[in-house]
Picture 1 (cartoon, rainbow, N blue to C red):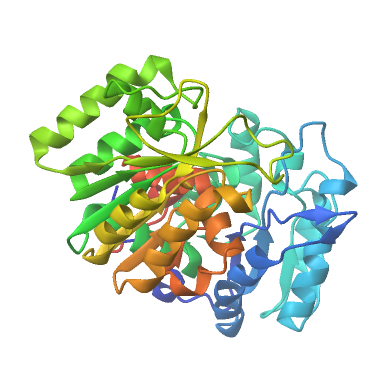
Picture 2 (picture 1 turned 30 degrees about the horizontal axis):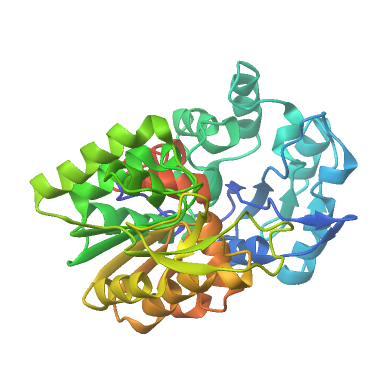
Amino acid sequence: MSLNKKSVDDFNAKGKRVLVRCDFNVPLKNGVITDETRIVAALPTINKLLNDGAKVILCSHLGKVKNGPNEGESLAPVAERLSEKLGKKVVFVADYNVTGADATAAVAAMNEGDVVLLQNTRFRGAEETKNGEAFSKELADLCDDYVCDAFGSSHRAHASVAGVTDVVRAKGGNCAVGYLMQKEINFLGNAVENPVRPFVAILGGAKVADKLNVINNLLEKCDTLIIGGGMAYTFLKAKGYEIGTSLCDDEKIDYCKEMMDKAEALGKKLLLPVDTVVTASFPDPIDAPIETEVFDSDKLPADKMGMDIGPKTQALYAEAVKTAKTVVWNGPMGVFENPILAKGTIAVAAALAETDATTIIGGGDSAAAVNQLGFADKMSHISTGGGASLEFLEGKELPGVAAADDLQ
């Protein structure tokens, strides 16, 4: 997959109808937006196109839309907030068909510098099915050029992400990426394909199964791979250690042995927890006060559950980060939602905050942790896509990236 893509800076949008796929999948409570981060992140691309004199047509999904179109997942609140942010009226097309007569009329009435927001793309049903072909064509009929700025959806070959590009390109239009997508490609893509070394990758989270291909791919790319979180216990069991009642993917024990052998064969460091914070059971509720003890990782009691990396491991991992020039982190070190079990995740975040390396947080729980713990402004880049960033780290081709025009 080429990472050298045409961006909004590489074509003239004046007078053109430009369809921009955004990520407006914002949290709503009683119709009120509770976190506008994704709206703010889309503004640079939208403003660039408006300043160039484009007619800007925005589209996005919101929620999972399991039971068909409904007002609870309408993009109407987004249109309202966008109008405030842009300082101009954003015309909202409320039609559940998304690209019907109302959308056609709204676009036909646009002048240069106008903005139209289409209804939730998922109201049209599954975008990746046969229905997606008609939807792709209808979206393309509304515009001259297309810009994808929704990295969080770029791993899905949906009509509004990838399908539309074939039709736009066939009629001579540009298919480019926005500033948000460009940033993701620059940081995540270059970190994996062309890192400044030493390159340290940190993987956490619950299950080995979720990160099989990521572990395999990063072992070939990085100099040091650090494992923490629930997935570490499967590795520890693969070493023959007692892990008590800790989380374990028993079917992946052989895989973990293979990965440890692979690291050795490639001359890469693979670091596992040397000590572990344990509890008698999982906290209920998750943030409830809980009694903890610390044991060396090869001496865990049979009736206890590993919940976080211990202080010696925190120091070991922080030391590994100190000499790095590039660090990618995906997945917390423990049950970070509980303040007592968040110390390992805090220690890793603090180590990243103190290094002068390029630090990239791969979306999902690790992004949430960094934001919640107050380290966000100390990181070089926090990915906006959990699933998409994982697939990038796996080395997979992302449809939304691949569909953009390559720079000649």
